[in-house]
Every structure is written in C-alpha cells, then in structure tokens.
Image 1 (cartoon, rainbow, N blue to C red):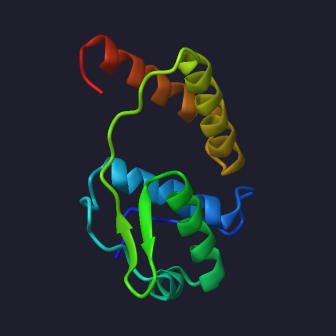
Image 2 (image 1 turned 180 degrees about the vertical axis):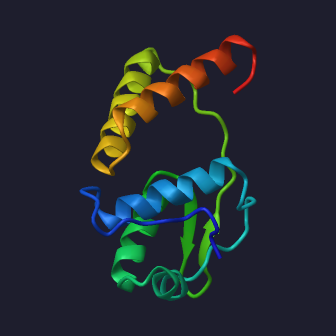
Image 3 (image 1 turned 30 degrees about the vertical axis):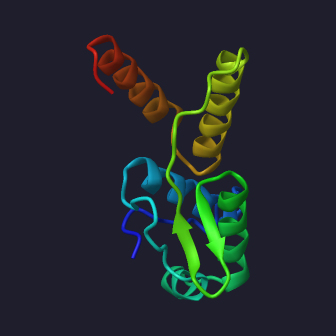
Length: 131
C-alpha cells in the first residue's frame, strides 16, 4: 500500500497529522503519480490498525492543502503539483516549517544529536550541489 507510511501511536503528534505528513513525503518522492488513486480510507485504516475517521481526517487535510482530490464514490486521487509562487515571506515560512519539523521529530523521540548530524549532512549536500 504505502511502504513509507508509519505511525507512532505513542507520539505527541496526532495520528492524522502523522498520516498526512507521511503521505506528503510519498507525494514528494513521487510514490503516487498525478491522477493515481490512493488507498481507500477503510483499507489504509485497516493497514495501519486505526479508526477510519482518522484516515478520513488526514485525507481532508491533504485535500484542503491541494495534495489530493476527493471524489465521492471514486476515492482520493493524487493531484498534479506545481511549485508555488515564491511569496515575499518565503524565508519566514521556511524557518517556521523547519522549526515545526524539528519539534515534531524531537517529540517523536529523535535525538538532538541525530537531528544535528542530519542537518549538517543536508547542508553539506546542498553546498556540493545536491540534495
């Protein structure tokens, strides 16, 4: 189904947000192509061992953000994504998003040392022209 999607029921991050975050990562990794159907709400809920309303909440959030399209009787479909126009506040948005990501990682049990190493490695790769 969704190989990369993992949830941690002990995390302080709500499960629906973990699902939405995991699916966003899969969209970025091109696991789902535009127009491709996502797992049904019930199928994903069964796969993850959670209530279907939790998956439905994640899908509604992704639809509101423009990642997916929800079609009655047809399920959820991945939408084509284009790069957003760069607003004047994009550095602030980036900083806020990065801080939120770091806070979620720490809340999920990732150590500060691991975060520091991964950020350092990412900065090095960027300096070398990669990602």
